[in-house]
Length: 404
View (tube, rainbow, N blue to C red):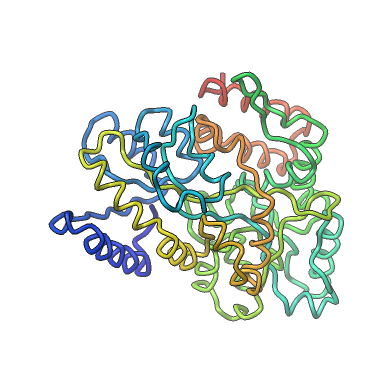
C-alpha cells in the first residue's frame, strides 16, 4: 500500500530474490508487485471480491482493515500455516490477536507503530524545559512557554480530522470510545472520562489557544487527502513547536525541511494525570492471503520471507515503524535514539479496540463521526448535543454499519 518508494522497491526486489533462493520450486514463479494508494484500497478490494478480477494472492492491510475484510470473506483462513510458523512465538501477542476472528487467523502482523509527540530538543532547552511533559497540565504549560519563547509559533497542533490522535486523549482520561458487550457495541463518548478527553483536545484551540484555527477540517497532513501542508509541514518548518504523529513521519518531515532535523525527538502522549502515558492506538500493517487466490501455498511461503525477523525489521526501520517481534523491540536500538525512544516507550501502552471493529472503517473513514464531531466543537457547536449526536451515530454504525 502507498507509493512505490525507492527503498520499498529495493527491499521487495531483495525479498523476491530470497524467495526464489529459499524455495527453488518457485524458481520460475514471477512475483508481480502492485502499489495501491491507501485511499483506493477499500474500493480495489471490494471490486476484486465482487468481480473476481484483479484479486491479489497476498495483500497488505492496515490492521484496522483486517477484521473487516475477514468478515467479508476476502481473506483466507491461515490458522494452520501460522500455527506451524517458526517465528510465531516471537510475535507481539496483541498484534496477532487483532488478526484472529472467532478462533481463526486471517492475517499476520508485518510492522507496527504508535503516535507520540514530536518536539525539538533545542527549543525545549532554550525555553528551560528540562523534562518532557507527563500530564495534560504540563503539556499545555510547556506549549504556552514555547510560544512565549518563540513568538510567531504555535505550541501544539490539534487538527480536527485526526481520530487516531483524539482517541489517545479519550483513553488518557480513562474513557473509552466504545466497548463490546454480549456481541453488541456500546458507544461511550458521553462518559465523563471520554468527555474530558474530547474537551481537552478541542480546548487546545478554543480556550488554550496553543493550536491554530487553520487546522479545523484538516488532518495532520493538511487538507483531507493531502500529503503535506498541515501540522507536519509547520513542524518541519519551525512554526509549530510540538506535533502529533508517528515515527514514520520522519521522512516526510525531512522532505519539507532538514533545517531542524538534528534536533527532532519524541515523547509519548501524556495521560490526564500521569505518570504513565496515554494509551496510543496500535497502528500498523498486516499481511493476508486472498481467499480466492489460486496460489495459497506459494503466497504463504512468500509471506514467511517478507515477514521473517530480518526482513520485517529492515522494512519497519526503513519506514519509521517497529517490527512485530518482541526480541527486536527489547533491543537498545530504539531506546538510544532521540526520535525513536519516545515512540518505543509509547509502544508499551497501546490500545486498538474499537478501531478493529469490522464496522470501524464505516464509522471513521466513511462517516467520519469523530472528525465531524471535533470539527463542529472547534467551530463553536454545543458540546453536550454534539457529543451526544456523535455517540448515537457511532453506536449505530458499529452495530449495523449505518448511522441510522
